[in-house]
Amino acid sequence: MRGIDNPPSRRRSLRLLVAFCCVATAVTVFSLISARSKLPAGEQRLRGHGQSRFPFRVDLDRPFANGTRLNSTSSAPAAALNSSSSLADGLQVPAEPVLDKLPFVATGEPRKEELNNTQPGEIVETQGSRTLREQLFASEMTVGGRKPEWLKPGPCETEDSLCWDHCLPFKGETNVSCAHATRFDLAEENVGKLCHVSVLHLLLEDFLDVVKAGGNATAHFRPLLTLGTLLGSYRNQTLIRWTHDIDLAYFVDEWTPDVRNNLKHGLRAKGYILFKQTIWRVCLSTQHPKAADIYDGEISAKARQNYAGDIPYLDMYGLSEEGDIFKHETVSGTLRSHDVFPLKNFSLLGKQYHAIQRPEALFRLAGYGDFMKERKENHK
Image (cartoon, rainbow, N blue to C red; front, side, top):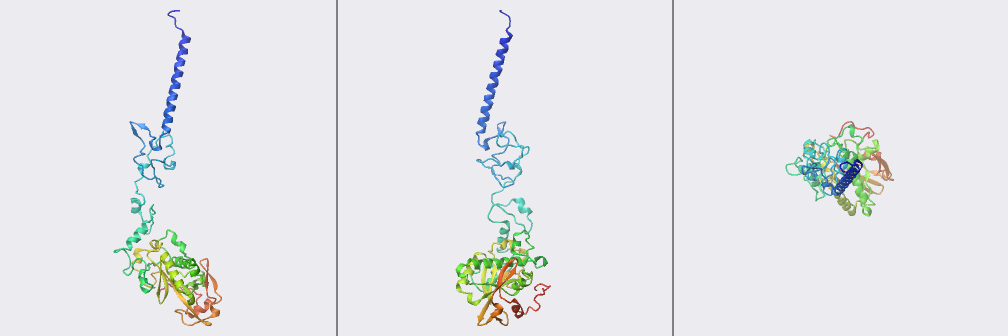
């Protein structure tokens, strides 16, 4: 009938219109989300006034606290952001931008605040190949640096007493806390409190490693503990805490040109110097890998030359044989064959080393007196 509404038909049309609008809206939203997910991580941004609200591009090269950097082809590590943020969908923003709080640091350089807060003797590791300590040591070795007037940095090209001037000066602690010190203490962060015998133990082990690495050239060469080093092993199985050096003996007939050349080059490769002043000696050069950790400019600048006790070194004493008699360099008197052979093993800092059969005979010849009684005073 004209003029009369048909309510059922109108409601049906309205429902169809609403359903169509909902479907269209859902399709549009789904298309937008799909298109957004295909953007690179650096392009996923929240759009507000046409600008990004998260500084991806501006802070592209700033590192996170763990050293990780953002780049245009990789997403930021989740650990660098708050748990409330998500780079995967880009729909949430951290309350406080983490990147803005991190200063820019060039690769391989220590941060300025790290340099300012560094304490004397403290090592600052960087992404570069050199530590701050190595850089400071290098500056000490230049003209005007804190070093003894006699010190000549670098290798020694001769094999005589002039090499003392190339030896790394170091005077470590000798107190009772050093009674069981070893080379492994050098790896700990206790610079300024290093024991002298820790460096001596390193010198001993490196020397024996070079002998072992010589292969056939040094296979017949047998270094032996002797004098003070043997006494420390014999008495307490440790190095005497106030000793200046390592004492080794060798059989003169085993000291061949091949052995000498092999040791010279092998030791030099490890940062040591082999030279002769009355007897053969070994010391650390300024090119030793541990030189920067060992050297203390304030103390070492006052170091004395030679064997006064301010340089760690190793002495080598020849054992010459004449029939049944053996003569030990620098020691008065002689040893008999049964005092020397068969060689015997002695423990030193948990490791076995060769020595003569009867150390007591050597101690008496060296004038050690009551050698089982440890001295209370240090070397003067």
